[in-house]
Length: 225
Ligand code: UTP
Image 1 (cartoon, rainbow, N blue to C red):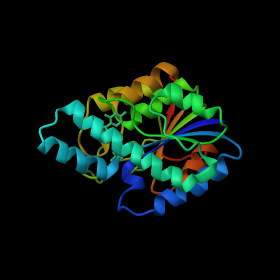
Image 2 (tube, helix red, strand yellow; image 1 turned 30 degrees about the horizontal axis):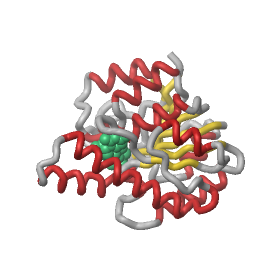
Image 3 (tube, rainbow, N blue to C red; image 1 turned 180 degrees about the vertical axis):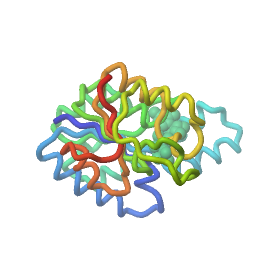
Image 4 (spheres, helix red, strand yellow; image 1 turned 135 degrees about the horizontal axis):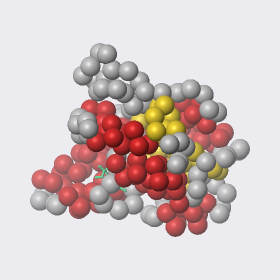
């Protein structure tokens, strides 16, 4: 299978340790023996910290995004260190480069591309670009909930949803609050227009990547319309 996996920066660099980079490296190396793998990593806390500094220095939003993109690429380079020879040792800056580098037969790891979206969108566009069989978004929550689980005890995990329903749902919610930051609209639009098979799962358990690939019932699966 051709797989695009998005790993949130909040998973990889939660506490500036190498633990999650190493855990993901081992799993990705194993998976790459059977599958063609593209990974998109987020910026996490260091991105937010540096964006804060840039803002204090008077940078506008797009320039702040640009700082965030640089940080995602640093995180991509760290994952490349863990993957060693299993990965192509250069971070693509756009989708064409990602496809080009994949001719090496190795794992491709990238961060952001350009301002005005998150790495969720990058992973969805990449999945379209390389015609991936599955897009797996490994995030800091178990998946999509009926309500913000940080605020409501009766929030329930949604195991299956169509992209249209997801779009409606997110549109009507406070997108910025808690959990709902976890998926951006551009990403959902890509998933909808290309009918991308997508799973959103908790990335703190790297094994969830394997489970999602094996079709196990996990997180939230975005199903065909
Ligand atoms: P992300 O918001 O994608 O990082 O990128 P993340 O780690 O997935 O976020 P969490 O913490 O796990 O939820 C960090 C920032 O980089 C910029 C945006 O400002 C974004 O908030 N960025 C990233 C872009 O502008 N374009 C991109 O293609 C990617």
